[in-house]
Length: 173
Image (cartoon, rainbow, N blue to C red; front, side):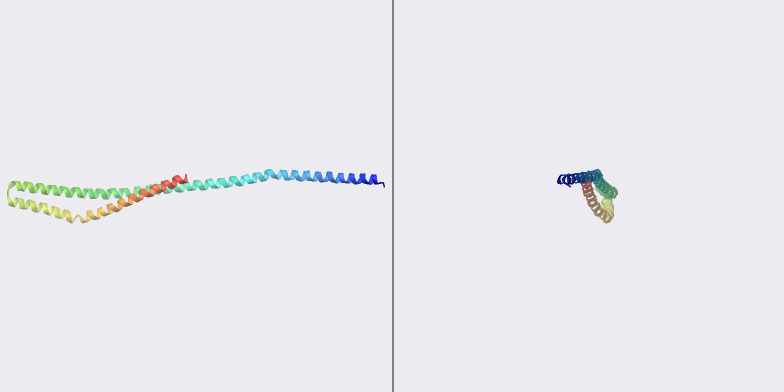
């Protein structure tokens, strides 16, 4: 066999193998090319899933913050009527005490105008007796006044809590 023929056969075999390798590479590239969109889709699916979970978590945080605001409002609604009732009791007592004082003073003035010492003495005793009874009963209003001070502090505290919860809600939104 001549060298020319041998070279042609070698070249031809090499070209055949080269074309075979090129076809295999093209098949591999086509196979890899099919997986790229699938990979991109999977990555986008994970990103979307993460964002969705983040939105759900944020929504839950907003709902919790609003529930805290509503709880603070309810605490206010529970505290204020107690405050009003106690304040009304103290105001009523002060009014009754003032009325007894004015009635006693007017009775003494009227008795003094008559000039009769017995009438003046009776009016003074009546006025003094009414005021003593009112002063003895003052222990209960004193307790109510302390309770009023305590309730006032509670109302102020509730207002601070409401303000804090509103800020937390606005931060969550």
